[in-house]
Every structure is written in structure tokens, then in C-alpha cells.
Image (cartoon, rainbow, N blue to C red; front, side, top):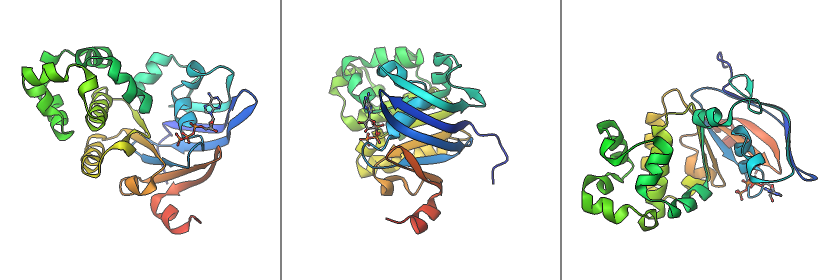
Length: 243
Ligand SMILES: Nc1ncnc2c1ncn2[C@@H]1O[C@H](COP(=O)(O)OP(=O)(O)OP(=O)(O)O)[C@@H](O)[C@H]1O
């Protein structure tokens, strides 16, 4: 039972790319503070759906058309200023990880947070510590070596993206498949941080590996061939959903 208004709402929402209906008449309410696992096989439409929340498909592809309603705090995302929308909902996907190779640490911190290295606060440092990348920031030699993001491991890059996402303090943060690439130990730490730091924010994680996130997910949305075939409590998904 939910007493608050949904933070995100889909109302008979479909997404067409050219003549293909990628997302098919979706209805869904997502509430403040929830941890949602968007689960589904390859090509089921997870990324297309998550990009729809931030009005991004239209920027990436031609011939894209959203039909029906998609709302952030009651307002159609099609009418909202995209910069505002993306400050409220942060979307991170694997292309973000790849694009980091073309930037320096200074540039990414400045571009994403307007932050200079010398201005990293104690609060930020403690988040970096929990994400396992504070040593990079702790002395000048390390900073020099790590200034080119090409020199960072995938795990370190994902920790950096997680840090940026948390530091921007959005109302909703979306991790599209990127946490699947972490090793078991770092994944446990990242999940723990997300769980503790998220407070009243909504977290949406998409994955093809249900078991990686079933412990922190409160609700599961199962997407299959562009349709929501289950949306409910994680326990109910585990017990009832026919494999
Ligand atoms: N720009 C595009 N043009 C045509 N078809 C597209 C485009 N983008 C996605 N699709 C198609 O839409 C469907 C859903 O793709 P999407 O990437 O959203 O799925 P996904 O569940 O995120 O997959 P994965 O788990 O592999 O990341 C797929 O059939 C894909 O081929």
C-alpha cells in the first residue's frame, strides 16, 4: 500500500523506433525511496525504457516516438526541460563507462559536478573511501597517474560514476546494467553504500542477473519482449514467477 504520489509513472506508454514497437503499452508506478530491479533478458527493452524516463532516446536515434504518458512528479517528461529532468534523474549506462576514456579526472569532475580536486570535502572523501577509490585522491603522485581515465580499471570507473551519481543528489538514480561488471567484493560494497546513502531517493537498477541484486531490490519489474510481465515484491517474484 502506497500513500505517496508516484515519483515516476507510465501510463499506457509505448515506444516506437521506425515501424517497430519496442515498448508495448506499459503501465507502472514507481514511488519515492523504492529500490526497483528492472530485470529481463537481452533486448527486452530495459535500456529503451530507462532512457525514456530522461527523454534520451530521441537524442540518440532517429524515428523514435513515445506514445502515451510518462511522468516525473506528475509532469510529462516530454514537457520538462531536459537539463532539469537529468539533474533530478541521473542515468548511467555502459557507454558512460567507455566515454570516460576520452576524459581526464579533472575534466569529468568539473563537467559533472563543477568540482575541483582541491575542493573535495570530507563528506565526498568518505564516499570515495567506501567506494574503494580514495587512495587515488590522497596524494599528488596518484592523482597524476590517474588523471587520464584510460588508466582506471573498469571497477574503479564504475566507482567513480557511482560517486558522481550520488554527489549530484538526484531524486532518482538509474544504473543501466553497469553494476553487473563489478567483481563480487566491490559489488557488495557498492550495494551497501547505495542502500545506506540513498535515503529518500529512488534507485532503479537494470540487470540480466537477478541474483546479483535480489537482496537489495524491494520490487521487481520483469520486462519481456517490451512488455511488463511482472511488477511486484521481490519475494513474490521469487516464489510465484514461473521460470
Ligand atoms: N536505435 C534502435 N534502432 C532499432 N532498434 C533498436 C534501437 N535501439 C534498440 N533497439 C531494439 O530495441 C529492443 C530493445 O533494446 P534494449 O537495448 O532496450 O534492450 P535491453 O533489454 O536493454 O537489452 P540488453 O540487456 O542487451 O542491454 C531490441 O530488440 C533492440 O534491437
